[in-house]
Length: 332
Ligand SMILES: [Mn+2]
Image (cartoon, rainbow, N blue to C red):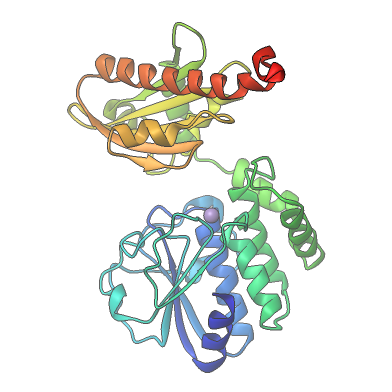
């Protein structure tokens, strides 16, 4: 919990901070924000991450100092693990030999740390770093503000997603007061893509189809598309969400060919349509509106199976809503 984190920081001096593989805005922003907080308190701290930092986040203060590692190769008093569901998510060997502080905002997070601070009410881990800064009596510097604001913007989809609370906006307001520049962050996140991403998007969107009832959209990414466009890992981030911007689409899935007849599948939905249950049927997992799984088989066959499972979930969501206006219910 928070008080244990505060006590640890006060009593120790030398820290590492890490986050998950394929790091995102919350993982990177909250890690860098914490590093700026720790160094402002006179502590030694470095951010270590296994994978490359996407271009969008390289403009954050301190991003250039992030060290890429595959194992813990120095002595630390403690290692902060940000936004990870389990000890394997950072992809860093020997992590378990350190004193691990697990900081996350997903309720499903395993309590794998020596200290575990999990706050499912926080919109982003970045919001928790702001709270930590306040709890420890630190100043929200311009650097902390920029990094934490990035975490908030990316994890709330620019304050669009249901995790955007009154508190999120209050924290965002404080961060802007402390020097975060919303337009700079938006420019970095939304207008700084590589051309290979746009080229891949063109090919992927050309495969876009809808189910017969018009409520499910789906797309394919072949290995040839990746080769032809020179797309990098992460260039397809968010593609699965594009069809959901159409009013009558309630679920969307995106199949990426990883080997012959082997696919990584991302599933997304709106409102009460539960794609986590669909992913679980295929040994995957995730949240109600965002989940994933790995499938083996033929494109057409697998698409049909997914459409069937998603249609069942959409109908279930329809039925759950119906009783509200049902005359039978009002008579009862
Ligand atoms: Mn997050």
